[in-house]
Structures are given as structure tokens and as C-alpha cells.
Length: 469
Ligand code: DOR
Ligand code: ZN
Image (cartoon, rainbow, N blue to C red; front, side, top):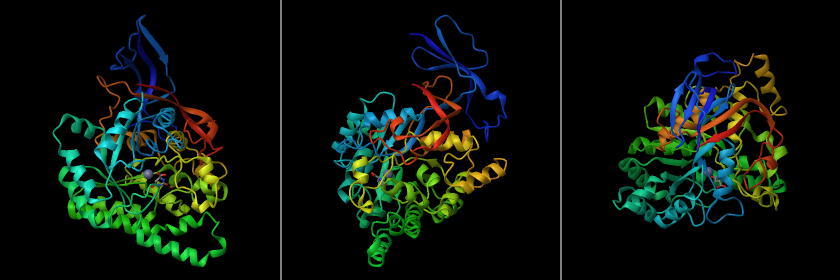
């Protein structure tokens, strides 16, 4: 086997190009990778030998394999939607090499046996590391969680190593894993005591139930209107639930991570919690950054997810949260459902969730290149972006190093995932990106088993052209 030498790549670090304008030439490096897949050298003009495969990566960006800390790979139990194998292929095609899978599988990941089964399956998947969140919906699961986290047997220690933390659903979503409200504080206390990362899906069950009843009584004639999904799970519901979760973090000292935060109020609450120095972090999902309730017109049930699409005001607040560092991670909530499930029957009854693990990187690269990936929507935003000389648009600011921080460094730290940054002696797990390549997203050229994307036909700039490791 030969060594590999990546020649003249742009190493994405803290001082990489913003808005596609190269400012720091010293980020251009060669990377030498040993036959065993370890980074041997990073530097200028590294000597090559006849036993070295030289790959010219000039003009290309080098990231570590990215992390998506929120996916639903559906295995076991829902293999008609997706499998670990198919979705890992989608992840790698999108430059993602480590994912954290959620517990709403069948059976749910709430027992040691269920976790062990998922780990056994994941170990067969090459190239993409799959870690798992443990679900807690009843008191008995909390007992199991404590055993898992404190167990001294080799087997429990091994399984714990594959577990990225606890997932808490504060309201029902796909898989009906809503937690018993009476044990929430105990879960927070346990996570604080045992230092377990705690991820919360924040929606308030009472506010959602009330909004649903209101919609059903007022809009009886138009219950086929998919946009009512957003009315039935309103922004106030997420805000109240985030406020509650933060109050629990304050009370118990638990490290709280808010999943797929989608509202302006949510961003403000996390911003305030950080000011207060609470251990609170959050992620936003690409669909809330790139789609709004306007997209229901073209997407129908293919735009249905929980939390739902919001108005442009909320989308803009999420971008502002990225810009000022309130948002810690971008994670996809990759949740494939079959086309048949999305199309059969009333749109409002279709399952919630959209795929996204393969499209996250190209969408973000497009914004980093100073463009908006969908020329049709929202045109006002695109116009502004162009008129503002690419720098003054408040809605779409992100750099290549922001992508590194949001999709690698922060999730790696928050969930102690053990992924290696690009440095000498580390495993060479690398994404090579062509930041200029333009291409069209389409369900047919993506790898997820579901075969569709909510970004069908969108023109993106930037592509993962190869992964190593
Ligand atoms: O839209 C969603 N889909 N939200 C969730 O909370 C679950 C997910 C799924 O598993 O389909
Ligand atoms: Zn999810």
C-alpha cells in the first residue's frame, strides 16, 4: 500500500476564507498520510517518494470528516425508510463521517439490549461512525441509564463508549417517545450527577394540544392545508418548552443541549442562558435555515417536520444566532420517510421528518461562497446578498471556518465524541471539498434510501469530492 500526499490543499482552520475571498495564503498545505492512515506530516513542499500517491488538491478545502449530532437512521425496525448502510453512504457523500442516531427506532433504544443491538449493527458499517442517544421515557429507563453509565463490566463500558448521551422528547413526535413529565427533573439530576450530555426536543405538549384543538374547530373546512402543521405546533410552544428545560438546567446543573431550535424566542432564551453562564448549548437544522412556511406551497407534506417550518423572521433569527455564536452546532435531524408515506392520504397526517445528512454541507458551502442556494426562494434575500457586496446580509453569514466549528469542533466537544481534528499523529479522516463546483441537488443523485430531498432542483456551490479515512 502507498502513502498518500495531498498537495496544496487549503486547510480549513480559524483563519480561512470568508465570502469566498482568500485572505490567508498560509493555510495552503501538503498533508502526508501513512500507509496505516495516520497523518504523518502537515507542511509546505513535503517531499514525495516513489511509494507515495500524490493527489493535487490545489483550490480544494480540507476539513476533518464532519459530525452530524442528530440523525434518524431508522435501523432497526424501519428498514423500509432507511438502513444504517444506506444512510451512512449518504452521510459520507455529504462529507459527514460521524453521526449520533436517535432512540426512536423499533424497538426504541431504551434498554441495554436495544443499545447493544444497534452497536452490533453499527460496527459493520465501514467509514462512518454511528453513535447512539439513549431514550428515557419512564422511570425504569433511568435505572438502566445509571447502570449503563456507572457499570464496571467490560461490556457496559464498551456500550457506554458508543452512547453519546440521553435524548428527551418533551412532546410527542415520530415514534411517540414523549417523556413522563413526572420524571423530567430526576432525569436532569441524573445527567448532572453522572455528567451525561442531555439533548431535549423542546415543544410544549399542552400548548401544542391546545393549538391543535383550536385549528381543528376553526378550520374544519380546510384541514387539508399542510401549513396548518405550523399553526398546530406554534413558536410559543417551543419557547415555553425551552424555557422549562433551561430552568431545569439551572436548577440541577445538567449540561443541556437543545435539539433543532427553530424560533426567534428560542435563540433569545439560549443567548440569555449563555450570558448567565449556564451549561446550555443548541443546534439548528438546515431545513429551518433554508426553508420557511412559504415552502409548503411547493413541498406539501415533504415540508412537514417537528418542530415545523417557521416564518422568515424566525429563519433570520437563526442565522443571526449563528453569526453571534449563540448557535453551537448545525445538525440535520435527518429523518427519512418513504415517498409513499409522504404522499398517501391527508398531508397533515403524513409522517414528520425530512432527509438532510447529505445536503447540509453543500447548502452551507453555498452560503459561505456568498450565494443563496435557491434562486427562486427567497428572491429578496438573494437580491440583498448581491446588492450588499456579499458581506452585509444579516441572513446569510457563514464562513468555511464557521462550518468547521458548527459541524465538527463544537459537537465533538459537547458530546465528547472523540473525533480527530486534522493534526499530525491523528487518524487521517478528511473531507476534500471543491468550493467552486456547482451542481443541482436532486433526490435521484443523492444516496438516502428515501430517494427525495426538500431541496429538489436547488443549485449549490461546493461539493465533497472525496473522503479519506
Ligand atoms: O420531524 C421529525 N422527525 N421530528 C422528530 O422529532 C422525529 C423525526 C423522525 O424520527 O421522523
Ligand atoms: Zn430528530
